[in-house]
Length: 139
Image (tube, rainbow, N blue to C red):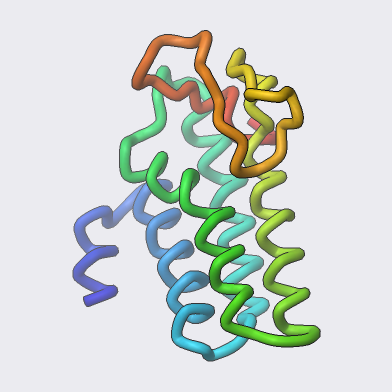
């Protein structure tokens, strides 16, 4: 099934992002432990998407789905583990989240102003449009 999902987005940065995310996330959810190679690949691909999409007006919807899921899904997966592995997964969750620029950088204000993951945000930008160059660090 994973190959079928990735095949739907084959080619380009979106396909790479979906594939890297599925590989990392499914490895954690299956209880296989923390796959350093899958994690590093996901980090590389996120940076690649920032470069590839820098001139675009909006992120493809499927890309937004991945970006929105990165922190909460990885954090939830940490609960499947104990000790050092759980700590490693949580650290990865925060590092991956840091690759997605805090809301304040793209004109989105966070309720309470903390900028922490999970805070609700209200957008000053056009509704339904996420600006790529504002979303990803390194763009």
